Amino acid sequence: MRVAANDNFPPRLLTKSQAAQYCGLSAATFGGTCPVRPISLGVGVRMQRYDVRDIDKWIDSFKAGTASRSLADELLDAL
Image 1 (tube, rainbow, N blue to C red):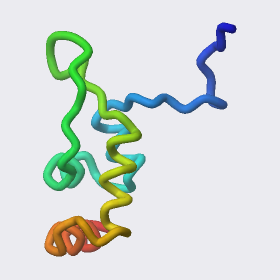
Image 2 (tube, one colour):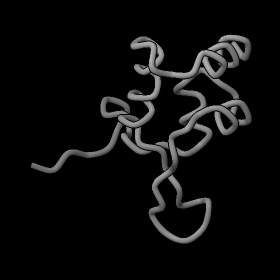
Image 3 (cartoon, rainbow, N blue to C red):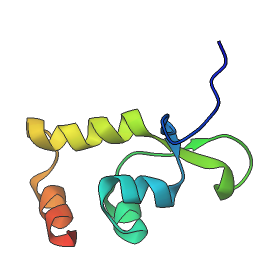
């Protein structure tokens, strides 16, 4: 079954700007604090995408207490 892309199905792969917005951070803060590395879908930065599942794991690590405390403090300060 083929499903058309629309607002009911959010994308799994996000641009840096979208990933930052997803986390509630500016693109600069996201780039400086998020350890998730983008997936390269082709040549150049424009073809790099962040996997939402990897971002979710990173965010969940704060709840589990596995993220560094200083990184958590930086993120809270950024908000």
